[in-house]
Length: 399
Image (cartoon, rainbow, N blue to C red; front, top):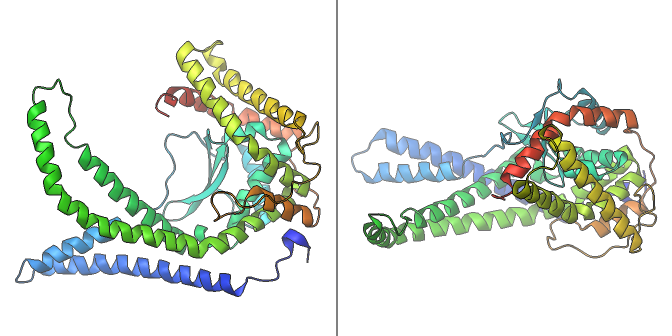
């Protein structure tokens, strides 16, 4: 058994108890949702002598609709890469998945986030990777492998938040809360109209009456909304130990696949996120305001080349300030000591993760991304990143 990050003496009793409680809450939620739907339909369809039962049935059906399981979908606005369009990229992802012993990905989408996210979508829980191109551009080849291995490693870990039972319960509760908040916001804006409108006065009076009559409904929605928010907080709290351990296990998986050196480097260079994201938005606003300096055909090269150059300058600037990054390859020389927890204590901050990896066994890379394969992947991404650049510029005003 490897030491440090890989040495897991077993799941602590308190974590097992907390996880069992989370499963119990999730099961209770799904049972209540199914019972509300079935009981509500029976009360409506049986049509008993009084009108009370059908009304109760309608309320139960509405409750079941609010708490229905929600399955993630592919984002239609993001460029999508199929296996036929990107064989080199999928070959790399398949090598990582096979090395981790997890099921291979079904689809890859590009985004403008400085992140890599592996999620499930649809009833069949197919797997997709949302690859943030700014991160891909800013990271060195082996750092990219580490980032991919970390995300795919979550499928191999025992993180109950990504499981079908607890994950769907969290999604259902979060979706219900969002739906109720959206309903309240829609009600407030239902009678908004221009002051120059011919019926502005009539609409203003109607709005006052509507809001007065709607206060009872708002109070009725406030109680179930409060209960759902409490259930979300409870599930998050119960699954916190499992999520923290899963994050450490995903780091260990990244170290085994991409090498400990690359995993530490990727953790350090995630600090470029804010600077790179700001530069992406700045370039998009500049392009929207002043137009492109180059030809339309080279939009993606102009845009993403500047983003990549800015990421390099940020890394060089951090190095000049005495950061712990070696010149030349962006790999940390001496990992930073633990710096406490971040604002969200549900997941470990980068300091403890770096320290944990540094205390473990030093692993060589088992999956590598050489220059030829990296170039082939960039060629496969050429058309999709051009579309992503244009979408970024078009949406920058709305963002």
